Length: 294
Image (tube, rainbow, N blue to C red; front, side, top):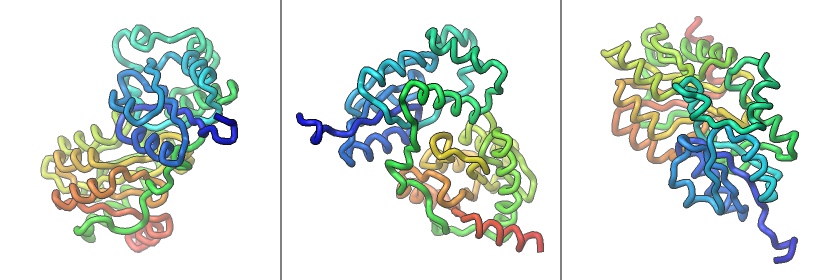
C-alpha cells in the first residue's frame, strides 16, 4: 500500500469501563488504525473486538508499553477508561504490578512528587512524550461525548434540590482543586460523602449507606485545572444504577466538561428510576449560586 493511502495509526492506552470502546470505535470510523495497550485487571476483555491489534500489560510495564508503541510505529496516542488506583495499595503490590526496569527508574526519578491523580498521569504522559509518543485528548476523536447544558430527563430538580446543587458545586470544585475527587453527595446542604480514591460509583453507594432515607443529590464536576487528556468526569448507565441502588434523586454535572456515555440508555434508565439529570454551564451555576445566596 502506498504511503499516501496508509491509514493513520493511533495508540490507545485502555483502562476499564465503556469509554475505551467508544473511543476505539470512533477512531476506526474515522479511518484510523487502533493499536491498543490494554491494562490487565482493568480493561474489559471484549475491547479486543473494537481495536485492530491489542497487547495486554500490567500497570508496571511502562517500558514494554513504550517499546510496543515504537514497534507499531505509534507516535500519537490517547488514554481512556478507569484505572483503579486502589490497586496501588493492594497486598503484594510489587508482585501484582510486576514493574519493569523502565517503570522502576521512572518511579524513583519522581520519588519527591506526590501521588495524586494529576501528578501521576502528567508524569506518565511526560515519560511517553520523552520517548516520542504524544498523548492527546480522546475527546479530539469523539467531542460529541461532552454533555450539553440543560435538563436531560423528564423530571426536574425541586427548589430544595437546586439549593443542594449550588451548595455541592462549590465543595466539589474545591475537592477537584485539591485533586482529591470530582464528586460530592449532598442532602439538605450537608455534604454526606466525598469521592476520593474509591471512585464515583462506590462513593454514591456510601452516600446511600450514610443517608438511608435517600433523596440526596450527586454533584460531579471537572477540576478547575482539568486536563482534558485524562480523568475527565464521566457518567453513564452505571452511574444511574448506583444512584438507583443508593436512593439518590438528582445528578448534577458540568456542561461541556463531562463525558456522557451511552446517553440514550442513561437518560432512559434515569427516567425509569425517577432521577433528574441536569447539566449546568459555568454561567448557569454562577446564576444559581447568586440566587441561592440572595
